[in-house]
Length: 240
Ligand code: TMP
Image 1 (cartoon, rainbow, N blue to C red):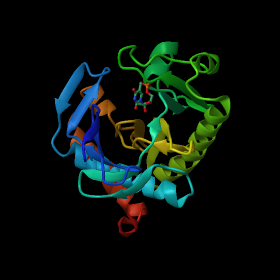
Image 2: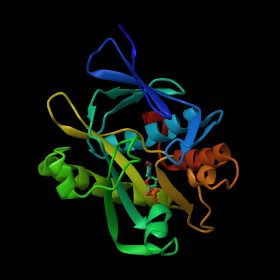
Image 3: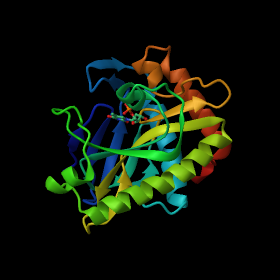
């Protein structure tokens, strides 16, 4: 029986006839402050599905192991079923957001080496910061799998920083999530869209990501559409 197996803030996951494959539905919902700010934004689900599908197709072509199979419709995609590892893997190339506020520095400082942070995925606990020994103590993932996750994250950073530079965007920071296939293999999961990364226009430093919504800087959909249009100029739509 086909049923909804997960309802998130911006996506739903549905089972399919194939037990190893899930259908993702992108919703027209934006949230910030861990769900405390919430709005319906018409067209957002479609744009994020298009952006994430383009990026995951590109990552698959670059031999990054991901859950993405294909885009199914304007708001749906097919993905490999994984058990999500409850960690948010954040990489920062420039200071922004919580890094800037937590350490009292201005935004826009480029780091000599990317900053890597892990957060424990838990809405009730507000996704607290977690370090490697705490991850081991809670038995969330083996140190070998954690290393694999960081190795994939670093390669994603190289590939996407270069890709976004081609379209005049700086990849400031981003969050990745990983999951395990039934045979235990760790692969990249979730999505990659302006909801879970920061993108600044190279010339103007304009925010072209969810900070537009978080900080009430204007309308979100035209900004996300602009990111999509720029991506389409470098990633071949036919290859989806
Ligand atoms: P932060 O500056 O708020 O810690 O966010 C760093 C990056 O991670 C930013 O690109 C947004 C992304 N992120 C998420 O996608 N989900 C989250 O729950 C958090 C905390 C950050």
